[in-house]
Length: 168
Image 1 (cartoon, rainbow, N blue to C red):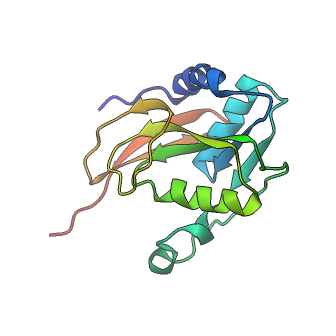
Image 2 (cartoon, one colour):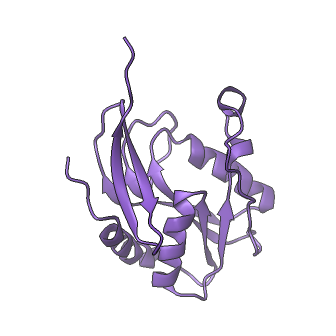
């Protein structure tokens, strides 16, 4: 499968997001890939918009099963969430559980006027009724496939596809 160019998708996403942006908008990226994506979108959409980051590890409903992720980052929301339009940014939308966890954490900071979900890749397979208003690309992937956002040392984003090992 030929994967799309992540950098091109980010530029297209920025254009798709423009109609949603108001003077009360803020970007919030979900660690890790969503933060990388939010940083790129922030530079394309204008530096005047506030930006924050969330690490949803402690808010996930599978925390007890999956355990603690080895690279927990602190969440940082350096603006008042109350009454804002939050553009929530993640790299890959799959089951919807990370987005649900992010919304739960966001509400701990205040009540936004609305939340717009922007993802680089919508790969289907939802377990929760969550949909992205803006998606760079929609891909139909098999259950044993994972798509991952990568960032090189120069900050260039790329996508890679991985097959999960199936044990019989």
